[in-house]
Length: 260
Image 1 (cartoon, rainbow, N blue to C red):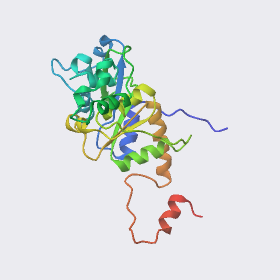
Image 2: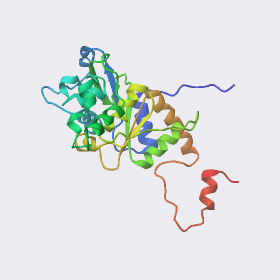
Image 3: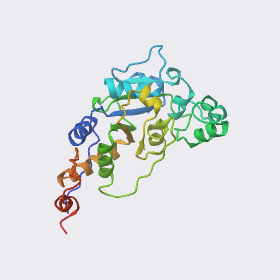
């Protein structure tokens, strides 16, 4: 029988493969949750806000856009919305009411509350801190990885996930607070989680217009990269060269879908 191997989850190797196979322009990062703030503060070369108040989007952005390793507790975040998504603040009755969003993001009190109920968040009580770092740094043992990519890169990453052990992947969109669709959902469920980054992620986190976000466990990212490599061997790779809209399609289709 052929020898089976386990895909590597080494952060530097995963990053190298992502840049090679998808030509990403943004650094993939890892998130690790901590039950004790002291353990977060012991991470090598960790940066702390030191009195500044941020959104979680900014903390993620500092790792993805600037290459920083950053650690935070709930006290470093601007409010309960950011902290609750990663389980650092309770999703209590006041939070569930969503009053700050009424008349701003949603028309009525009921709409704001429905939005809060729709969000997937890490349960409160276990974690006291979070750290984020470039995946290649090796400073964290990440619970999840974050990959920013344009739509063409992202669909190939999804195709890689589906190369073996196929299953349909389904996601939702809560709209504002879309971090609940990505890192909130992935941390809470362990499932690969795709999102369209929202207004705050783009305004405060520096996410460009063309980028989407996939949050997934290191082992799922490794599986996706194995699939991407297999697809690349079949000529299905990034960048996807456009086929002229008036050309006879048979030559191209015979390569992509088999010569039948």
